[in-house]
Structures are given as structure tokens and as C-alpha cells.
Length: 167
Image 1 (cartoon, rainbow, N blue to C red):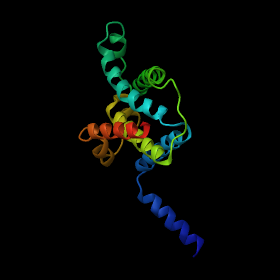
Image 2 (cartoon, rainbow, N blue to C red):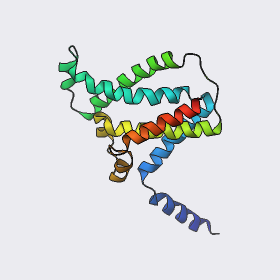
Image 3 (cartoon, rainbow, N blue to C red):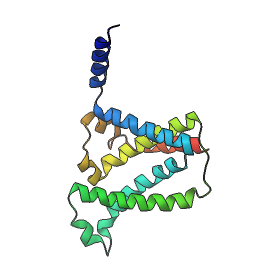
Image 4 (cartoon, rainbow, N blue to C red):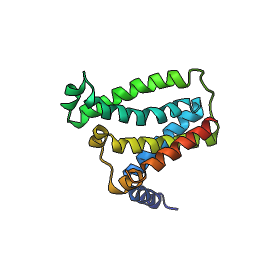
């Protein structure tokens, strides 16, 4: 086989895949490898902290002390930074509450389930958070799969997969 034709075939195959699906696969692989290395505690905490962060960020404009300041933030980058700060705080608190005993590395099946579940939960929350959606607006096919119509099903399936992997 001619190496030049192999390079052409490979680049044509990669060009056929939209970049967003590759990004989702990389997210799933990252969390899968992390779960394989250190267990599913961090992925489980992420699965709980991300949607909870979305709820807290949506409630912040109605708070008594921060409401007027939060309502003035309308650019995507500061909104994303606010979401990130809330997520980091909730992640640290939830990790301490839920998984203070630590966990060992997981099996291949547990890692695969945790990686795919975390990627699905990240995608659902990304499309719901105004600041994150402003940073990267996914295409219509991705929005159709992970958007409002199927968001609850992805979250329930993600939580079920993480619960199975933890148990």
C-alpha cells in the first residue's frame, strides 16, 4: 500500500467527522482514564456538582446580597467564570461530603461507563449554562442529541451508569 494513499484516506476519514464529536470522545476518554486510574469518586462528584452548579448559578441573580452584581454580568466569559467558580466550590464541598474515604482504581467497564456518563453530563450542562454556551456554541446535530428534549434522559442515564460503576 502506498503511504501517500494511506495519508489521504486517513485525513479524509478524519475530515468526515465533525470536530465536536471528536471533542466529546476526548472528554469521555479523559474521564474514563481518570476513573480507571483513581476510581469513580471524582467522576461521581462531577456528575453531581455540574447540574447543581447550573441550578445555583441560575438562583444567584435572585439572592439578596449578590443579586444586583450578578444581574449586571451579561458577557459570556464572566458568566463562564462565575459558573466555574461555583462549580469548583461545589465540587470540593461535595467531594469532601460524599467521598472522604477515597477509592481505588476501577475496572475497564467501570472506567468506560464513568467516562461516557461524565461526557454526557458535561454536554447537557454545557448547553444549559448561558456562559458556557456563549463560549462554544455547538452545532444543531449536537444540540439535538444533548439539548432540552433529551437532557433529562442523559442525566438519568449518566447517574445510573455512575451508580452502577460505584456499586
